Figure 1: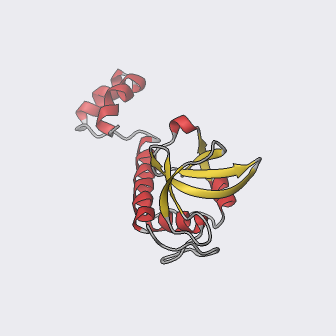
Figure 2: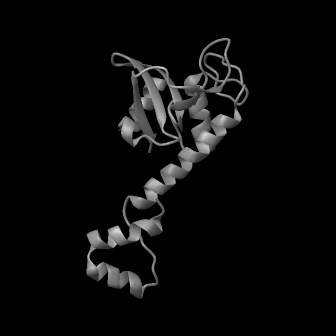
Length: 157
């Protein structure tokens, strides 16, 4: 939803005086949280495109690109190129994201695969139940359907 589509609901929450001020100053809206959400979505979209551009790159444990990747190396590389810094491992990345529910996931969010409380794999959500990821030794970066329900979602801040 664009910021323009949010203006009526924001004005209802902000009150009539703010709406009049808004009209008087020419229609610019500065709302805490909205700009940062839009910026996060922009970074996530860029990171998703960067990960997709690495399709076919070989998996190599410990690799962070630009030609070879492991799972967290791909997410680290993609978000770094999109202007966001992530830590190195999947577990560390999980701890640095804003945790979200499956129903609130969006393309560009990170998908963390876990066993119990231990995170062991990460990919970038591409929509429609699929992720871009670097699966394992002998495989390549690819788009794949999420194969288990043992996942958590995180949004890069």
